[in-house]
Length: 364
Ligand code: DNO
Image (cartoon, rainbow, N blue to C red; front, side, top):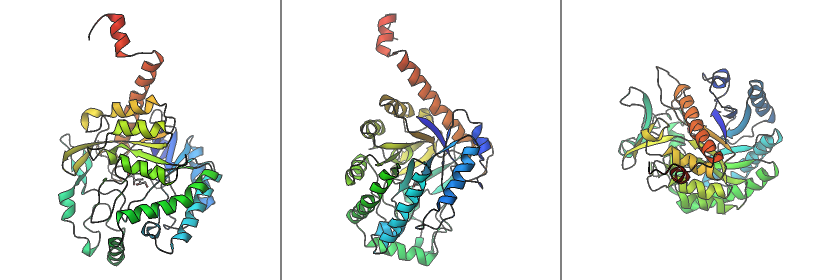
């Protein structure tokens, strides 16, 4: 695998120079942030981004994300123009040799939390979600009460979007995803770009909006919509791991062995109730995701794609973009590489507990 790190561009206080000091990180995950949703990402903007990353001794490994216009998700008649633009942006990526595109198909809201600064026992601040608190948020006056989304939509824009989605069933959303992928995947394949859909976060409907990319059956269904290598997954342990029905190592083996995981997001969550969780430090002991089993599953089929630590807590007094500070994500990157190194070396030395016991004649 290749360890990567998300960077929000020139205005990110977590600079490339700082990222450079995290051991083992060689790839950058980034995006162009100032093109309106639905418009083409000009090749010049992508080139500038890529050059800045190259100049700092990294490679731009993944674009995360080109947002999908709501008209595409809603299946509106205007979608074809936006799909054409999307295809053009993918071609522009491919032309520059940027190989992976992460995207999502979540209606209206991307990742959603009810608290962006939930305090853990050690004093660190993390992101948390409680479905009961979400239910108390009144969207009729806009997104003001929804952490992280305050300025995303004007109240009237939001109301008309919510109304439009009231007419859309989950099956229609699936149809609209299929329509999109049938047009976009062949373009990606021809441009040498692979696409990885990011699961819905959290993986259940919110505010009555349909959310469909939630579990193993759904991921398989996405792959079946267009059965091509370029139509793949961003496997996010934090999103999928918020629902205990998801057997993450099994899913990684299944989709990874099929060659369809193109990007790995590794983070941990602690489930504390029904549809209730907070994000935890990356190590297995801190959350509900067994990160060793996750890495073992990736290692088993020889995952060679980009992986990144995901949301970090705010620790050591750091302030900044929720989930995307430097320190805790850096700890995550190093921890994940530690697990990987152990798996590599055990594998190279043909180390198994069984042959260790045989050789040493011990049960310990
Ligand atoms: C959250 C991220 C998501 C992700 C998009 C991909 O931190 O994992 O916002 O970038 O869902 O389209």
